[in-house]
Amino acid sequence: MRVGFLTSGGDCQALNATMRGIAKTLYQQRKDIEIIGFIDGYKGLMYENYRIMQPSDFEGILNLGGTILGTSRCPFKKMRVIENGFDKVAAMKKTYQKLKLDCLAVLGGNGSLKTAHLLSQEGLNVIGLPKTIDNDTWGTDYTFGFQSAIDIASRYLDEIQTTAYSHSRVFIVEIMGHKVGHICLSAGIAAGADIILLPEIPYDIEVIAQDIQKKVQAGQKSILIACAEGALSKEESMLSKKQYKLKVASREGHSVVYEIAQKLSHYIDKEIRVSLAGHAQRGGSPCAYDREMATLMGVEGAKLILDKNYGQLVVFVDHHLTAIPLEETAGKLKYVDVHGDTVQNARLMGISFGDE
Image (cartoon, rainbow, N blue to C red; front, side, top):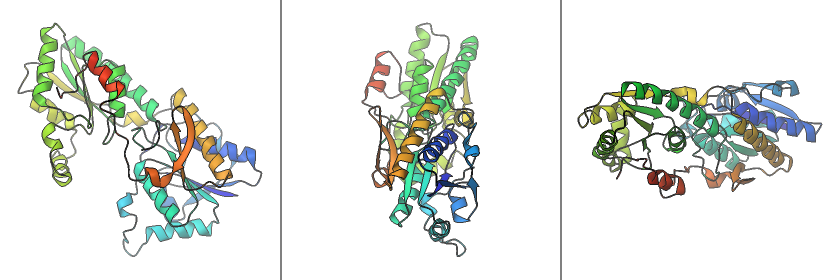
């Protein structure tokens, strides 16, 4: 039985742990397993760049961050675009068939899983495993890498908290998360942020200023604002998709926190600083929880392969590992539930979301 592995999109801490879980289970359950590792994600599948993996390749990688296979971003929207005469989908199918693969295991986030579904529709045997620190894959309560990112982001906020207090400053810290606010919400609560800004809850700069002034008048020395990278104002939320893209492009690559700081400076008489937790949030070793979850998700993926239950995504729902069809998750995002217990309980204890 020949199985292909590839890791696609942005890296995260538990990719190696997941591959190890799949591989060790396959090797344990069958004696005829051969694993092909594609280098740098879908590019490896397109250009026949791969290596034959050995059981020893999966030893000593449980707590190793990143991915031993490398990764790359291959946007789904360009998958069917013929560039310089090169047909990406046809090339991937050709490699799959040439290597006589029985299944391809894709470890990826939303865009990568859309491509996995595309390949499944093209007749390839594919399974998916939910990889993203953003925890925004639809259909699963958890994606491996999420808890490790929360741990790093909350530690970063902790460290900013002490310097903010020493200098009586307002600190606005950007937290990763793409178009959703799961990391920012969890890390913000864990680190005791005063204000949490999420893409799902458009902010009003005047409300943020009022919240800061109230806290300062009550004797609070410093203010910590955890800001998701996709945070947007109420005015921006009213823009069309095209208009909003132009607005983001006008920042010329600068984080939204700079814009918020500049706006806020017109309303409060207090020193404001900005900081970015950055790519460290998806680097380093996976935390213990991610090692466990990634391992068990890997085992679940191996079961799908052994049972020839293809076209499925491993998911964690209601504290139980199971699988759903790739077509159910492809193209969908899981957003923060703004009416859920986490947000509502945070409001009850005085955390502001800059909206009311």
